[in-house]
Image 1 (tube, one colour):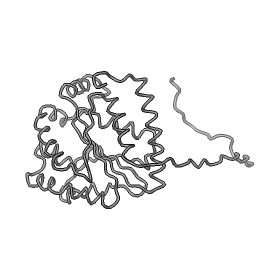
Image 2 (cartoon, helix red, strand yellow):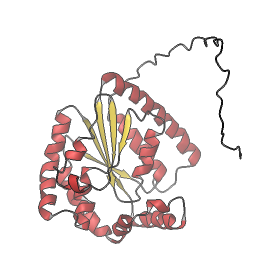
Image 3 (cartoon, helix red, strand yellow):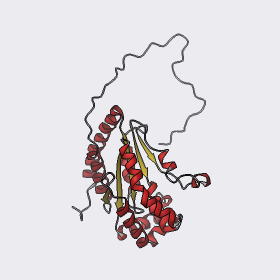
Image 4 (cartoon, one colour):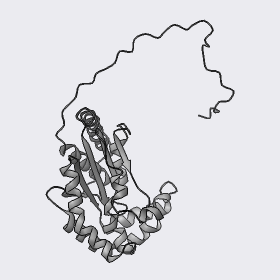
Length: 261
């Protein structure tokens, strides 16, 4: 299984089944007013964005909301560290997917020196209590760490260098993460050790095979929420109303996109 790549046809077949289940989960989350937070962390080029895309491409953005915060501005740097993340927490009937999260402090900020040692230690000492507060308040919190081998990460970075469609994915921070592999290994090892708890455990996703990683992660996500099929209350289309006297038959445009295909 692990050494053999999953064929595209089989992958698409299984993905469609899982995406149908995500739609059923969405309906249940809305009906029950659940609040769900899913954290996606991991090594650069491990495929976090890919699985988030597959989770969200068939569901409503009003229910499944992706949060990918940029670096904090000068004002945010003076706030409580968790403040801007708390502002993104879900209301009833929402699933929030964090593409990177508060764990930036234990990863890139630690390795790159973007925070002080005191800020880093304070974060590690308090993050478990912060997550306990979320869970105790009724939020369903699920945390994934996508792990990839050195060889596979390098292969993906080199592909980005050569492909114009992927070059935007290769940032200076990616280059640093490639060069500082063992610094990140040490940082992530301590992060997992300090924040893996009974109320908010970490789940490792083996991601050298992107297709398998996506299917495994989505399947696990679905298993973490005890949802039931909510019947679809299909509305009746009825009949179109008759055109009233004086109403135009079509919309009149002065300009149109030229048909090239």
